[in-house]
Each structure stands twice: as structure tokens, then as C-alpha cells.
Amino acid sequence: MIDLQEPPFYEKTINYDEDKHIKICLTVHTFKGVEWLSIRKYYQDFDEEWKPGNEGITMPLDLDNAREMFLGLVEILSLAESKTILEQEFKEILDKIYLN
Image 1 (tube, rainbow, N blue to C red):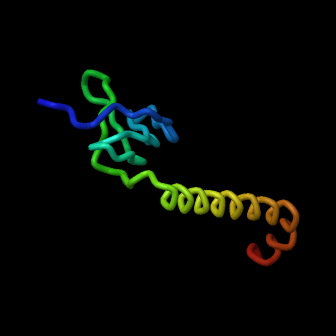
Image 2: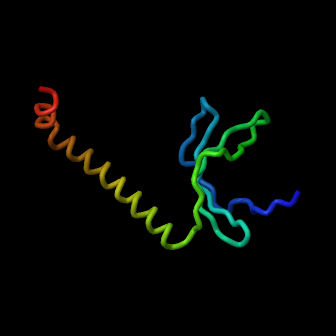
Image 3: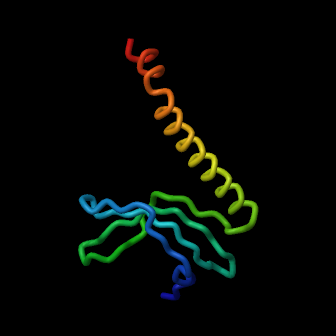
């Protein structure tokens, strides 16, 4: 059988669950001359080889998709940072509001 998909030229594990033997990877690969960006769950088979699962997304790697994903991640990080700062600075006030 011919393998039409080239191996990933970028791969980063972004989450690993040792107990469940699964990981989530960000990969960039080429298929039929098009570059693709994937975020996919992988599992370990009985031979302890990592195999891609059915859960995940794949989209063409172009400037629009990359920019929108980057903007979304920046917003998420910004919100998380803001929440932490607010919790630190206004903890007493928030506790009075929500715990009473």
C-alpha cells in the first residue's frame, strides 16, 4: 500500500496522560501537496506504538487559519492572566460577595 501522507515535519505533544496512555499532539504535515495543521489525540497500541485516534481536528495551514488560532490562544491566555490578577488583588472583596 502506498502511504500518501508524508511524516509530520513538526510535532509537539501538548498534553500527555501517562495513566491512560494517550497524548494530544499539534502536528504539521503534508498531504497531496497541501500543508495541514492537526490537533489530535493519540493512543498507544499493544506494541506501545503511538497511533492517531479519531478525535481531533485538521485544517489547511494557511495564514488566515494560523492567525485566527493564534488570536484565540492569546485571548484565552489574556483572560486567564486577568482572572488570576483579579483574584489576587480583590480576593477579600470577592470572598465577601460569593461566600456570604
